[in-house]
Figure 1 (tube, protein in one colour):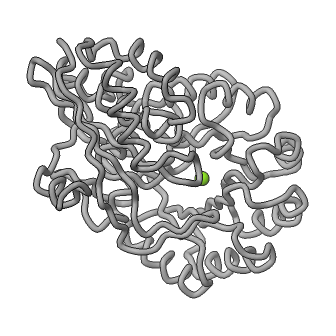
Figure 2 (figure 1 turned 180 degrees about the vertical axis):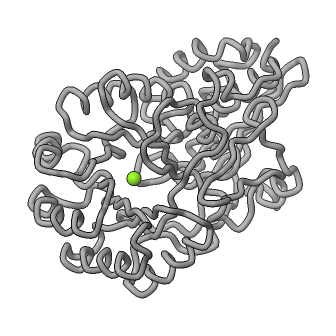
Length: 369
Ligand SMILES: [Mg+2]
């Protein structure tokens, strides 16, 4: 089997609501859909979802790199040689994990379709059919955070991730306390600070976060502050998660070696796809670190990749975050995810298990006049 054609489709994708986290405001998204066709007629789909909080990739850079760097390297190659191809591409796409993810997903999709197996099966098989999710509440005015939190609970979530760090420390802690007070006691809270606090901020915040029952504190310090992270980990009874600190498996080695977190947030797109995410998960497991599966709020294709990854991991002690498609005005698949009782079923069928909605893809094609 040979790769016959590659098409990168930039989308005009919009969120239903403004989503604020870290110092980023997202109202629209720069997704690129990748379509790889083989000489045997198999079609694999991938998705890139570049977000400025993580890399300098843009929709244009993703499309240009797919056309100019990826296409010459993989055209005519056997798509089943997934790992050698992706290892070669890594060297030509430094610091472009979102671009790499699009290719990675399309190659796994083709491999699954060729073998009539799901991506979960290719990854080793399923530990679970449904993945437990948490909802999310972006940073905002306290009233609107409470309103969003209560609306999220209608989907059956038993946990919510709240974003903090943009406001003054005391104001942000009051926001979190305010939301906590409005929720039933059994709802668990995770807090993501996107690296915006200092060590001093963290040490002040920890008792108040513990008092409102926060179970995971994600990336409170900037990625570069390894000593600070280790200091906070030593003094925290709350599990600290690394997100912006980890882009590849070597970063997980560093987290383990320096004890800068106890949990790795496996964001498929930020890590460069399934191959690299699985490698990070394995390094985390053998290093005694926990994992959770995160996202940057992708559409249905990359979200399906995250669901397959989550299905194949032995231990998922915390709720995960693969609810991106719910936040968009429209998806590009005909079988969108559904949250039931706070869980999402892993797609069945070969490959990623997504059916592409060609009409929706055409409607959102940013190249269309
Ligand atoms: Mg995060």
